[in-house]
Amino acid sequence: MFKLIKNIFSAAKEPVDTVPKASGPTAAELQEKAGLLFSDGRILQAKDLYEQAVRLDPTLAKAHSMLGFLYLEEKNPLRAQHHIVKALELDPSLANAHYLMGSILYDQGKIASSVASYQRAIELDNNQPFAYRDLGMAYIMLGQAQEANVIVDRGLELFPDFCDLHYYKGNLYSLALDYLSAEKSYSQALFVDKKSLMLYTDLANAQAQQNKVEDAIKTYQLALTEFPDAAEVKLSVGISQLLLGDYLQGFKSYELRLKSFMLDFMSTLPKEARWTGQQDLSGKDILLITEEGHGDTIQFIRFVKLLKSKKCKVIVVASPLLKRLLVTIDGIDEVRDFGDEIAFDYYSPLMSLPLLLGTTVDTIPKNSSYISSEPERVGVWRKKLRPKRNKPLVGIALTGNPEHKRNKSRSLDMKLAARLFSVDADFIILQKDLSEYDREILRHYPHVRHYGPEMHDFSDTAALVDLVDLVISIDTSIAHLGGAMGKPTWVLIEYNPDWRWLLDRTDSPWYQSVRLFRQPKVRDWDSVADDVKQALESFRQTLPA
Image 1 (tube, rainbow, N blue to C red):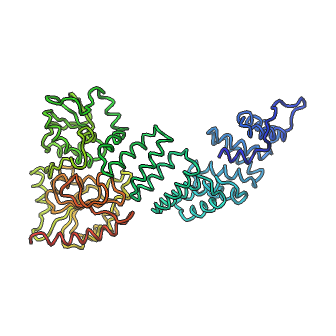
Image 2 (cartoon, rainbow, N blue to C red; image 1 turned 60 degrees about the vertical axis):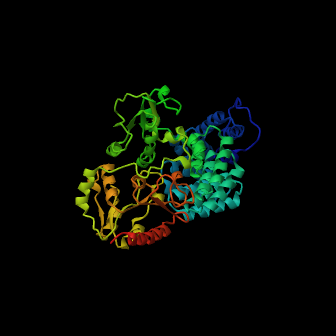
Image 3 (tube, rainbow, N blue to C red; image 1 turned 45 degrees about the vertical axis):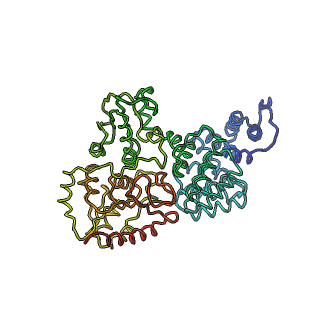
């Protein structure tokens, strides 16, 4: 915006002396001198002269408009708005003032009102690339993708070399799930401007969404040549390597995940006690710190067996929802809360163990069943369920944690899930919480039961998994629990999957009992639901009558 406003208001190329004549300059002369100073980059002096000019003559609309811009640059929106309003009262034909008013309204969250200002700016002067860009963003924020596309396309016709418009066009393609076109727009934006980290990461994401993972890695690496300290890019490289099955390199970069809560907790622990994989653990106590999601803990807790073979005592600090479940795992000596005072010799984040133990895809500990249910809990739930011998009992979990950043894309709409309910089977919802939308749909299916309020922690979930014949789940903790218990488990996977499911395979090296159903294209849950329904019909026929 600075360059735009500078171009609009520049009146000459040479700076002038700010010392007024003995008789004193007029307001118009002060405004002219301020414009020359602004052109020369002498911003503070220019602002002072604009202030002097409007004090001498409050009717100078252009001076008020420039002051509005300069106050916006100083992060003083109230003062800026005062001058912009004044400028528009004096001269409603000032395109730049309308644009600035749009920016003020946008920043105030008055997105719909900002649209009118941006539109008026373009009507008065269509040579304002930033107005096209910001109007496009306002439309995007209002959910008006069609209008956004029209204005961004019009801007690109006028300003084909304007990086921001290519970037916004890429965003619009991404919103429409057209990642190939998004990739082209982001590439064009990068051709114009290679100094934006966000451009690199969004281009790489568009490539990754098409499962062009190697291309995404190359883009991340290009970003690192420009931004060598970008930790989030290095982490993204690691995640991409993991998705390709390059665990030795990928888990090294994956260490950059340790942030926020983990760093806060680990900052209280002595650095010299961090286990690096080299120290002898014989006779020592090692503290394992669970992290991220519950599914991560269930997946990576398998490495306890390898640690235990080093003749050490294993202590795990975990979420209360997982404590009773983890106690059942062979090799864990204690399960503690995060707030406990714990004596130990060494510690490690749980998800660092694959790196420390040199794990590859071929050396993942393939325990067919390393988590068990509690017999007494199974007995309680068996009485509740009273499973029928002549019908399979299927446990399902088709929506994930609403706080997960990818939950919307990785969850199956309950209307699609309802296709499964036509199969001659009984169903039980394994997730604790359901939305009102899901509840309303399930009211039409009495053979689908949900015991959410009675499910207190993962020991209850494990008991239910023990009782069902099959688990069908999206990529969530229940999918990991089914696999960890050795229960036949079908996992429904996005086209661009989480790294742990790898690419182009229907099985998982992490769980012997898991079968993967992948989207054939982005967001195509319809095909997945049809495939699962057909497979469920076949599964039902294999069970004894």
